[in-house]
Image (cartoon, rainbow, N blue to C red; front, top):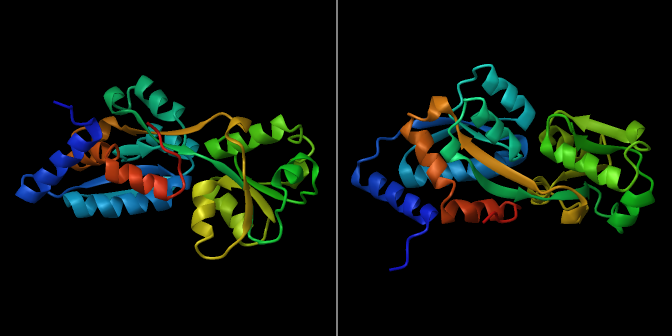
Length: 255
């Protein structure tokens, strides 16, 4: 007999429990990296429809969320924009080791709200005129660290320092570009995809091998380990429906 995949098994159990009245609707608090906010809102809606549980979302840069968790913020789960932070929390005794899993692979895009701004994106990044370029803070946000890595690879990190407009997180960096404060930005593909549902811009996807993979991991925090809703969402995030929503929002698949 072919074994049932773990994610599918978890979702079946959730649905059976919800349908039979065995699962009491609860609430979990999730700390979510800024780039993943819109995707997590879609996941929370689907999760509630399937289980009755609700997910309360707080969003910030991964670095800021880590500091809040260390300071005792009442979160049950962390959905980080990197793989290192959840594992660091495990090593510090603040998260459950057996709950860590990779849920998304992010991509970086050079983007402008001006549809005619970016033609040859590679040539522009390598030596074109860049008056202002928005990125997330590399010290706090993994997408900012990836943007720095790209510019260092091209030998432009130092030269472009006066042009860089740094947001505390990718959401703020996106706002700089969306409002015209910066004509260009190195931004998550997921956020670019969301922005272009409203108004078409121009962009160029950064080759995946120009920076280290942006592997995003989730973890159940110790304070959420006895919360049925938190445990249920951790399982749900591994399920096929959740993975489909993640892909629809601009992330590559993590097997």
